[in-house]
Image (cartoon, rainbow, N blue to C red; front, side, top):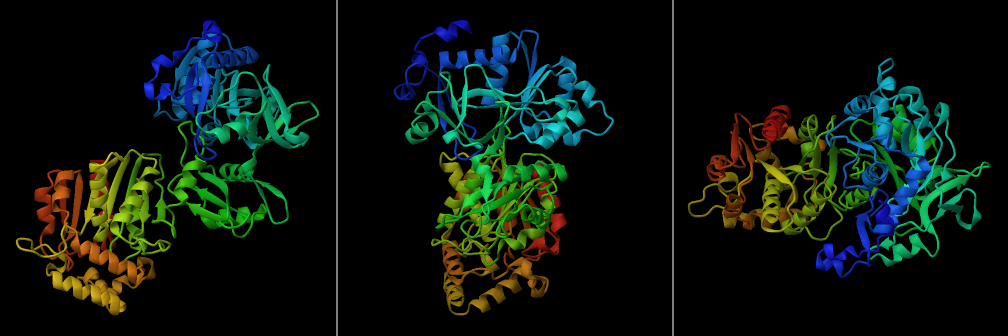
Length: 632
C-alpha cells in the first residue's frame, strides 16, 4: 500500500485500447456512482490518490491488524471496497464476506462466530435487523464484539440510533462521504443511543455554502476522485473550482461539529414556505409499521415551477389511505400521491434506487402501459408481467394477479389505447412491443415470466421473438399463453383461426363494425368471451371490458389479423405453459394441441368446462397451474 501512494506508473496499458485512448493518464479505477439520487455517473480515481485516501481514513479511525471486518455488500460496489476491503487490506486485518443470499440472521451468526469488531452498513440494514430482533433474544450479546459499527450519516435518523442501542446494544458511529470524494467525517459512538456531531477526517476541510447555517455542505481535500468521466458539466459543478459540492444539507453546532439534515432533494417546501424533511417522514412510517418499503420522492410538475410528492410503498407497507393521512398530517399537500408497487428497487449497495423509480415512472399510465403492481410477501426474484386481450383493460387480470402475488411479484400492463394507457399517438403492436421491451429493462429481476391472454399473447410472442433475434438479451425465462392462436385468419390447411371461422372477408366486416357500431362489437366480444356462461359475468366495471378507444381497437384488430407467428414461435421455443378453455367459443378448435405438438418445451392444460377467460372463471385454479409451472 505504501508503494501505491507514490507510484506514478501508467497502468493504461492494461486497459482495452478503446477505453485507454479516452481515459486520463494514471487512472486506477473508473467506477459508477450508485445512482440512488438519480442517474449513475462514472467516477475516475487515480491509483496513488485512492490509496492515500484509504490510508488516511484507517489512521484517523484507528483500524489495526487485530480488527475483523464484516462486509454485507457485494465486492462490485464502493461500500464494499472503500469501507471494508481496502481498510482491512491496509490494516492487515481479517475480512469476512456475507454471502450474497445472506439475511440478518446469518449476519448475526457471522458476527458471533468470527468476533467481528468493525462493519459499515446502511440504515436499512440496521433497521431490518432491529425489526427481526425480539425482546429477550440473544442478539445484543452476540453483537457485543463490535467496537466500530458505522452507518451512513446522510440517512441515519435519531430513531435508528436509539433503536440500535436499545434493541441491539450498538452505539452507531455515523460516517459521511461519497464514492467520488472518499470518507469526509465520522462521529464518536452514539453514547446511550444519542446522536453525536460529525467531525472531519484529518486533512478534510468542511464548510457551509455561502456561510449559511444550516446550508449545503462543501468539502475540500487533495485526495478525491478527479472527475466524472465524460460528464463535463457535472464535473465542473461537483468538483470545483477548489471545492466539492456534496448535495447534502448540514447544521454546524456550537461544538464545531456537523449534523447531516439530509439530501437537499429530500426537503419539500410546502405552500406556506415550510421545509418538510421527506426522509424523516419515511423513517417514521418504516419504524411505526416495521417495514423498509416506504420512499418519498419530489418531482417537478411538468410546465410549472411547482413540485409534487410521490410516496411509494411496497407489499408489506400499510394501505394507501393510511399513508396519505399521515403525509397530510405532516404538512404535505393534498395533491401528494401514494402509489403501491411490487417492491422499492435498491441499488447493488442496498440504497433506495430513486433513479430506477424515476425511470419506471415514464411507463406508468396514462403515458405508459403499466397499470398495477403486486409484490410477493417474501423476498424473491421472480416476476410475472401480464398483458390482457383486445377490448379489455388491465382490470380483467386483478383477481389472477392477486393470487399470483402470493408467490411472485406481478406487473399488469394495458394494451395501447386500453384501460388507462391513453396518452399516446401510435397504437400499433410494433410500437407497443418496443415500449414493453424498454419497460422490461427497468424490471429488477433475472427471472421474468411473460403472461399473455388472447391478443396479449400475440404481444408476448412478438416480445420474445424480438428479444431472441436482437442483442437485447433480457432475462425472459418462460411464457404463459392463454387462449390465443399464432394465426387468427383461416387459410388452406389452417383451421385454427379466431372463432373457428375468421376469413379475410370477415376481418373486413368486423373492422367495419368496430368503426361504425362500436357498442355492438363490444357486446359480441362479451358474448363470445364469457361463454359458456352468460355475458353478465363481465358486467362488473372492474373487468374493464370495452375500456378502449375505438381507433386503438380498430388498428390493433386489423394488425393482429395479418400476423402469422407460426414460424417465429417454433424457432424461439422457450418454456411455455399453454392454457385453453375446453368450452371456448373464441378458439373452438384444438389450437392448444397444435401448439403443444410444435413447441417441444411446452406444457398443455385444457381446462374442462371453461371458456375464453378461464382465469376469471376460476382464478385460484389458474394461478395454481401457473405457479407450479414457474416453480418447475
